Amino acid sequence: MSDRMWAETDPATFQRLANAAMFLLTMRYDAMITKGAFTDHPALKEVFDLFRDDGRAEEARTMILRIGRKRLGAPKPEHEAAITQETDFAKLEALSGRLLDVNTWDEMFAPAK
Image 1 (cartoon, rainbow, N blue to C red):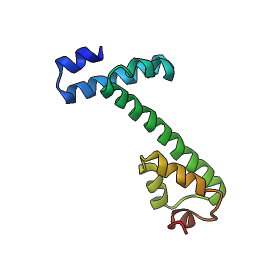
Image 2: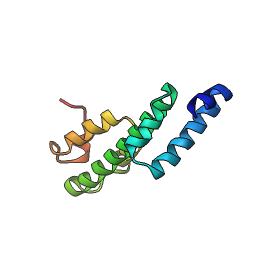
Image 3: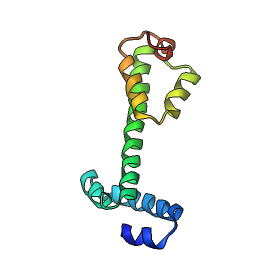
Image 4: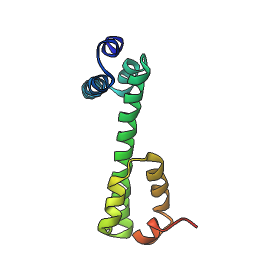
């Protein structure tokens, strides 16, 4: 499938088709099966990695806000926006690590010492 899509479409169409295929596959099959289908072609593997990273980032954002609200109270709108708009999983992971070391949302977003 990936070879034919790559050979018969332009890169933008290939990307759209790959995204659609990934979305449909993840609705039906678990991650291991889906990943297997997408590792044959480098561009499809990249799509799979993006979907995986997006899912991890979404879970991290949800966890930071849930635990943060419980520990620190309601976040300021700018703090909540900073979390919900962050897409870099490594940055979100670093923020989650700070949750136990701070007492306020302002401290959480202050530069690390």
